[in-house]
Image (cartoon, rainbow over all chains, first blue to last red; front, top):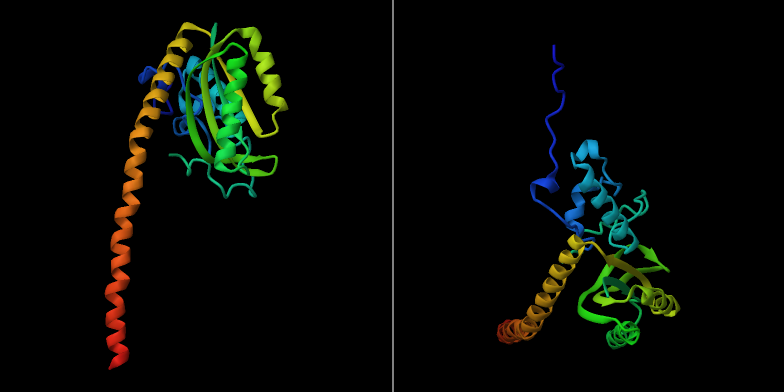
Length: 87
Length: 151
């Protein structure tokens, strides 16, 4: 007997949109692959394919270096949401 | 020649003119080293995701240019010496896919630059329209007050 799938089938959001390149300055687009604490979400939760997950990971790291996305969010720094001042 | 992109964060403590001057100096560094600037994109004053050198905000500026790969070390060395710069991020666009993305980004930045030029005079008109009724309202209120005090 085939084991029943426990979770709904996940698909790669980026593959569906046929994304070839992600811009690190587009922070709102990166929000999908970031957790509440701005950690990079694992592939098993977002359903990203390997190719796009690699792209997302490098782009998020670039955005962190450019101070667009925080490295860490602690209880002290959680007050400021960096996505608010997007134009 | 290879395609590059530089994001530059200038100190927020400078005045608007000083920021423009330092941005021009940064672009001068690239052009003097043989880089050809395609477009620039000013993202303006933004809040940083984390404080850099105790600064909470910064002036973001993006420069798209093409240059020889050997020049980049020199450009980055000059950036490191510049004390008005909080942070710079250099990104290489190497593969064919990335180069097409670079061209699209340049187009987008050019469009944005054109639209911002058009919008500027509109933005100046808007506050004037708001000022006109604001000046009228106190004029209408004051006679009512004077009559109240007269009674």
